[in-house]
Amino acid sequence: MDIALDSFPYSGTTTTFESLMMGVPVVSLAQAPPHGSHSHNVSASVLTQVGREAWVAWTREEYTSIAAALASDTSMIAEQRKTLRAALLASPSCQGEEFMQAVDSEYRGMWTRYCAS
Image (cartoon, rainbow, N blue to C red; front, side, top):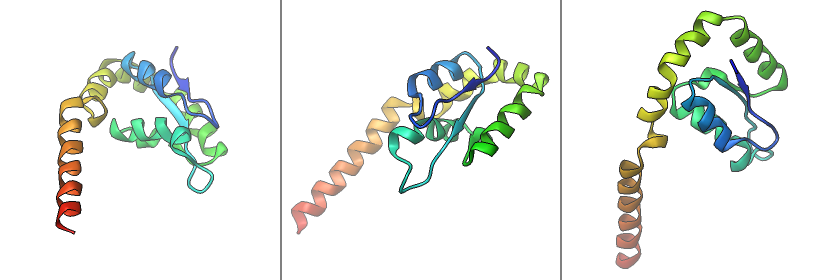
């Protein structure tokens, strides 16, 4: 598989991670509120975290255009196979300990503000 096309209207969270882990570019169709929801935009969020915002489309025409451009650039696909896994693993999406420290800090701040009120 050279390119993964994210499903819509429900985004494929697990398949997006698996594709990126295998070095396969993913094209996703995001949708802005009020029509877009968290479940619809997960792949767009993951791609953004990995620094691949260019693979996120906001219209069906753009989705098709991005996919066609990727398909015609075989040297870029080969390069992504070599670097995409490392980019995913280095992204905030895969930094569980740092994420939990940030969540904990936010909870402590909320609790402190609550107790002070």
